[in-house]
Image: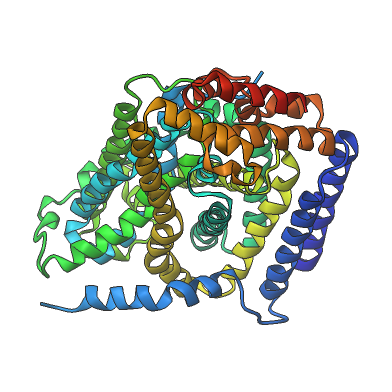
Length: 81
Length: 452
């Protein structure tokens, strides 16, 4: 069910934007590239959310970036005296 | 007609943005960290938040009709702007995902336990994306009305639970020293006061700020601080030592209301408020994220990227939901404030400092020297981003290229407020141009470039 709903969402997004694209005229290449990149990133995270694969996600990168500093700060907050 | 908002609407939107989801989400975690001093930590954070909102407003006033990406391009140059913009977008994407995941977790844990969370996440983002597509003017018209209903229910629940108050719960205030208070300040500054930096992407839509806009914005922050600290005090008064364990504290407070068996089960009102508040904040964040992405790509008002951006945010929420609630609590309370400070506030402060220094430097130059400098820079097309007048020129060239490239519809052309501003069609842009290009020589190439 989960995969069906997500596939439906992606198809609806593409159809809606395709129809608007046809109506409004061609977009610059960078728009199309960004569009594709966003969809690819969405698929990547959705694949992780299914549990079939375990890959590094958006919040894993944030944890890698800010985790050590935040942990040190919280450790200092917990220290008494 | 270009989409604009009034200064009063912007101040109201600021209040909506800061108060909406935080009034229900903030009291629990803050009490958990700061104990009975939670309300003091909120007031301290609000004081710092007032200092945070001032540079945002000052930059918007110094660069009328331009958002953070646009004036950053003029101030610090294109490469640094792209870096700052990507960091900013990274933070905004997280914010929208976090707000929706919060509401999904709330609904899953308190209201609809058997419904999978992806329904809440996907539908929330669908509604937010459709709202963003309608435009900023519709959002600013609708949100104050919705926020009034949220505040009404919050006040109602607060008043109806008076019989459950125990004022002895407010003491002791600081039994473990100042560090818990500081931890509360850290958390509450990150959410919601540091987030006001997102308004650097919205204030460009304000047609005329007027003289007292700073005062109105500070009033909005103050009203937010009083609302949040009030909700926190009520939670402490009702639950006492176990207040920190109550995650959605106002929802729990509403559950305790029972007056002569008539006024009971009031939590539905707070549930409604939470959903509505999250929707409003998600919409504002999605709007600013879309604006950031669009201006990074130097696109004019194009709605095509709204749906894929919302889908990407939904996918991040779905992936984060699988990691569990404990991990999520850590992300929000420990990582989020640091994230906002590093990737949103710090870039803005750097741009603000450079802009102030450049402003002083420009003021210090004699007028003739400044004109000569402008002419010299106009001759050098590679240095377009160094001078505001040249930035306008390059924007005009970009705009003409864009129009021939994308062939936007008449609807989109009418939506393009920032693009109009950069082309000098709006009063703000005219004021900006007249400020930045005082020499007649500087105006001549501008007109030529437009024709070209």
